Length: 391
Image 1 (cartoon, rainbow, N blue to C red):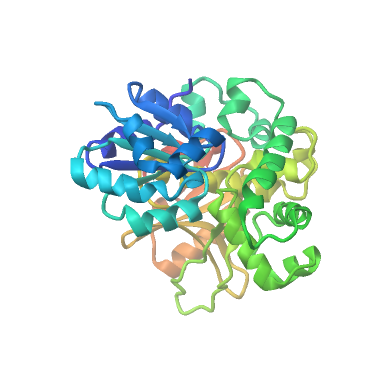
Image 2 (image 1 turned 120 degrees about the horizontal axis):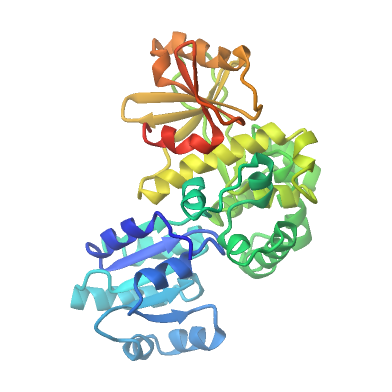
């Protein structure tokens, strides 16, 4: 088993809250993490139809049958949201920390149920696919940038040595057939699959709802709804523009990224990592890869993402802004493996506007060496954890 960095936070909050919910995309390792962390707990998968039936028809008896002195893991709780109200009653009576460990793959569905029933009683954690740090610790991190971007970071690919293109094709089909089919605002599964592929083709770009809708044959309103589904399923995330304008007019549209570049490569119908060398989206995919690593780092420490980008109407842009209190850390991302002086231009421009010191800004690039240029620290992609320590 690959050791997950979230494990320590999971143990920590389980000592403080009666219920802990671990959310994240399918196959991100939620079940393995919770079962290995709480080995003596009773475990039930609510993906299984007979367990769903028992939990729905007689929830009190269902919970009573699982009662033990350690606790209960309820896997994929979104399949039986009605069970949450009975969990609330139980924890209010017994007040035992960490007794219920829940996992769920549908953020939007599970969060809605939790907000109505378990507010103040539950700690919410998010587990995304493997981070660079986790892969490195397990001695699974490749030195080949294109290979890791193509392979992605889902644990099963590494645990079972599955070919990425085959695993992702099945993952996408399963996601649409099992998860999207449950949602009322998706009238055509084939159109939705086309929509996901169109999103992959726009990775790292500003979201144009009208253009995306025209290309897919749906309205801009439907595009917004479907993007919300992809966000709540942890397929994509929207990076919001930072509000600080320095008396400049700013772009207000978010940018579209994927949590996992392996999934994006599959949607782009790439057959192997060699295609990344010539892809016009190579730089955008690398941006997505780096920014998702920042998000993983935050979630693994039980912190909310604090990331933005900055772009003004004149076209000046900083790929990522990390906001921590009143401190802003600008980060530029370049896929090239050789540094070029021009890579630092936007950071220098932003630092001048913000009256910020160059030493507080960073450049992440596709190479390996660490450098300091114009007072700005440049890191190779494998040294991302060095930036995390400062953010």
